Image 1 (cartoon, rainbow, N blue to C red):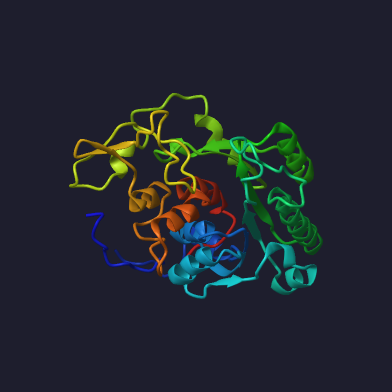
Image 2: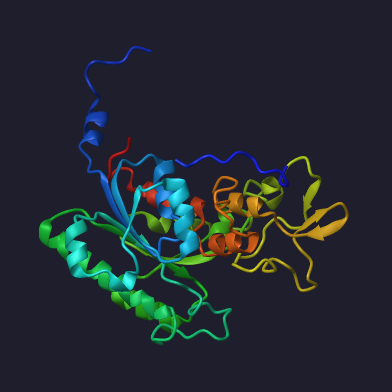
Length: 318
């Protein structure tokens, strides 16, 4: 039951004497050396582990103390923290190189179309300007990898409701156009995001965009706590943000009905909707609102999993 705290766990034929050509080829693939910017609760790293990649080292930039507490609990010291993205210098990048996978998503609140107080991409008092630190690091590593002839793959994510002028600016810096992926095809949450990336095949994830919701797609009912007579009022929910009231409709009704009353989603249900195990953010003395704030800023594991799985033929797996 959701009211009870379950025990929390950290994430984490005869054989031929001659290896097959496929196994031999895969054994020669490089191990991953990752840099995660705006790392949050470690969604990228969690997803790579779920996919079975052989990760030599992962560095991350994150300054939110609650997020750092969650990643510390779930991953111990496996993520090597570098501090603020604004303080990552070229000297630091040289020290941690080579990096063959860079991913991140700068804060979207000042770019989101639903924020009427948004400060945009260039305001030094806002968070949107942090994109340029992401670009600065991307550009240095991209040029460095080309000079040293090493593989370099990257992924940048942000909200799809941003103004076209901001999307066009980001596209000009990355010299490519983004694809739009909505997590509603992978989970019961609508979460449209732009992805700029060098990963080949990323456009394949957009094939669902013009399709109606299919009967086989994930429904909210499947993500609710069992044996509590909780019933979903909708098949899909809107974008889950840091606010507990984010999923209420125009009449302030929540998406779940229990004991004849409208109610919100349990935080454990939200964790599962995002693709995490229950209690992933249940660390220290974090409140429910603090945990939802962390999740509201996270990636959908299901989407990132499909994106990063496209690297399976590029990097070694365990």
